[in-house]
Image 1: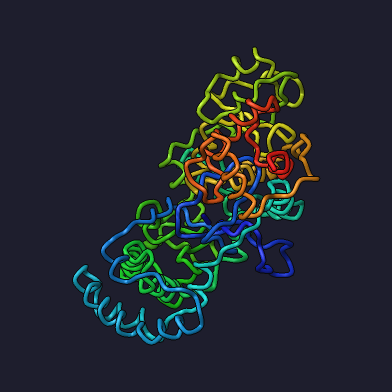
Image 2: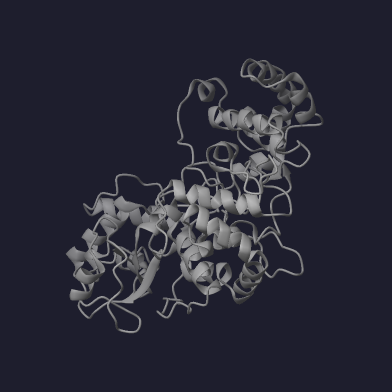
Length: 453
């Protein structure tokens, strides 16, 4: 996706000439930082393919991780890794047989499978730069992506209507995730899933997680849902039109066409779209509720109220002067919080429960807003009307760490100096801003860092 990482958010893979943009999100098989305040943070495992719709595994110190230490990505180390891979495959074969994988499935699935150096390089990729949300949305919700989405809505409208009725998930959400993940199926990934997962399981840094996913992938093949040759996806094992990991396949994929297979890979996206709806339903989607509504804040608004933990009804927000972009009270879709993805100088949103459901696909605010807004635009909704602080640039990794160091040195403890702008750093930023008598929006801007310097 995770983007994702789906996912990462900086797309570099060119789609076919008929489609203007590649998929927007990125996948990385580590937990994403709690990203907010208007920037897509590309950290240690961010790359440029697609998101898998499963919570990222936590970095743990497992027996496997202790036994097989993480390796550096030098040419020498990768050569050594490649040399040891056949022995790992032989040992894995015995573990797989013990878990019910048939020998013929293993023989066919591992035929010609070799260690994939490119997977390790992508897994270890570290980008220190930040892409501001407005730049991300310029591509994620471009006119061509909206146009292509409308064309897919016309083409698959009856299928999407059936999915909506059966699962109670609004079709524009499913369609937008499809558009964000693989550009409506035009880039589903070309990596051999078994090879990618085996490489990552052998590499050892998250051996337990990827070996478990590899077993699940083999069970998918053994179940007759796809052949090893057809099982292709992102470098980290995310598969199909909407980029499911193997474990997500077993938890949420469905056979919507009734052919006896849960087919996420073929040119027909029906099973994949229904599986995405199944996923969203599982995590609590509320039909008819928007992900969010763009709002305007009143003069003198208390920016400390723009906090995900502060929930009020639209009526309560309206009484405080928060209105939609036409000056009306937002309809009562349930409790909501106020989100300022680019701080007090950018667009503001009143976000509802479905925002959090989309977060289960990818927890970055930019991704969720991208999915939600793309779906709205496909259905004829307006562009975002609020201004963005386009003169700003995102902070580099070194600058984000410096910001945390300076906050902590001033007594506003961020708890970690890791360059990840999560809730603790935002809280520390707000405390500093309040102490300095400036707008407490918690936004980590270069302007703020320069003030601290």
